[in-house]
Length: 516
Image (tube, rainbow, N blue to C red; front, top):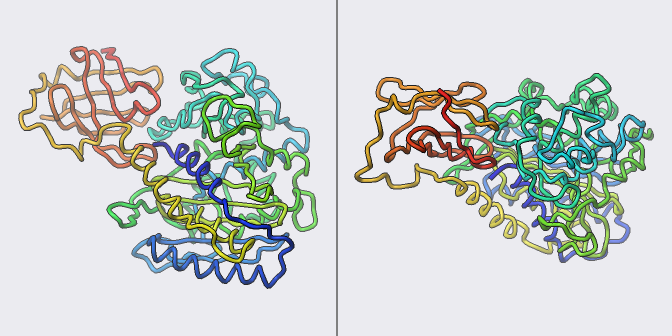
């Protein structure tokens, strides 16, 4: 289960969960303060129940940050506390930030939402020539290019660079007609952002800082992992394992920076929310063109089904805009939101109701279980109705648990299986040795080291010892954002002429052919 699948499915479920809100009308300070007091107590209660290590939250009303606070610790086993300045990796909340940066470029005429990628980046290709010629910035930012959910994500797991991953997307079969079906693609959106800035001669990371971060004082925000790593006040990642949160992994998302590589704190993100709520203005200045920004808030594709469907027939009225999930409250007001999730240890969410000038962002340094979404939606209930209308955690929990199970089930986890009592013997190990090639993944090496086989995976030549399981099947441990921690299977086929690496079959067939 990829991080992008996790975010995409969770958003559809949770954005549609708010069925009990009532008409709020004009909110006065008393009602706002009451909601904030309830929010503080609810967060404390939720953290105690879920045991998440740390959480940060900010609420924006009008053009003011009215609440910014941290809870818990930055890293388990250490005393440093989370505060409003603690920097988190925000995962897919990067997407609406990147659409804001794109809106700045659109507003100044540097690019159009409807520019064709073939014009901006002639070297980019999809697997279909017609789609390659017609796909636009708008298509990629709204996940309607036809690329499958998660296309390219496993290449990122292996350590391929951004240019290499974007090049390899030409070998990923499209799963729907371009422009007509929704499939959540980190690297599709990344390509749109990279293509849009090519003619500037600057990197996306430079443009992000110039067009947004530096303009509104987001001094602790970056699209570079190295900046996060160098922050003294940062939240570590924590994976939920056997009921406990553990700091085991580092997640470097530079290759998909526009889609998932932003790091920030709630104090900075509150400034960005204020910009959104005030039509591109911040501190009295027009930072982003209002019309270009408003376009990001408009529904572009039905996101609740995988097949083509008319916008007026979209089940549940769940839509995706340009980097935003676009929905409505029960009383018909626009509600924008997005979640972010790294299975290796972070979960985030942002929600806004522009008409009511209210927005909230929640960052958690733990495996996604629905906590950020629950806090956001419960606060909206407090703000609009004075009380919580739903137990959102009871809705979110099973969804995330189901997605964890799907992630675990896409390939066998041999560590959870009983080994054969009388396994068939392997062939002579030297018969398996050689170079095996996949058009999509590149070349892997199988070597004999003593009494073991060693597999070296591209592109970093990473070393993995293979343990015999049964016949021509061996196993190895692999941990990543998209495959979690598990013992996976490696099976030699056709008398050793091919090898199947099961966990790489997530978005390709995972088969490598022996060339020597």
